[in-house]
Image 1: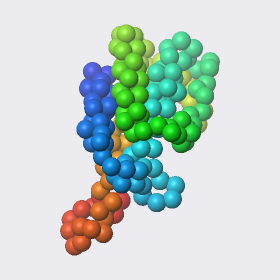
Image 2: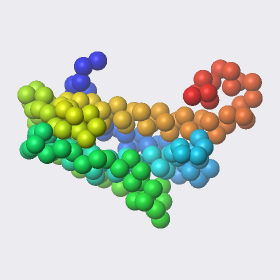
Image 3: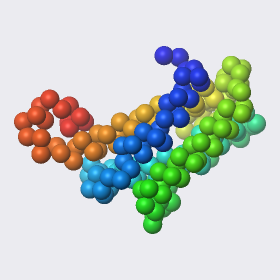
Image 4: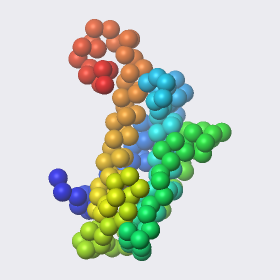
Length: 174
């Protein structure tokens, strides 16, 4: 599928409510669990999404629109959530994410992006030239990817408890 902002927006809009419906009010046995050393819990993922709202999607889109490739993006700290989420509850993180995402989408809509603007390039520290279209497509896919990650981590908490049905649950082996 080619990127279409009108098709991406509904996905980006739904992520906060999806996270709240999936995680809100659950005990920490679900939200703090991970897949082992060096992996992320649902709590960690929500913190990561918050950091992305602050430091990635809209800030980088703004750089592309205002400065193009003349100003490279700052490297993204993929682990900032461990510092930034310290001392916060999951409920607080879900509220914060919902507020930040709403602000991000309001900004994005206010730009009324044209096809020419979506083709503008920025300079990524690892990938080199990237387009605004690619950045926005990645934002959308990133959301869906982390929703799948959270679901996988949660499912694996019952990896042994499901007994022989594990053979019919491929998520347990991923």
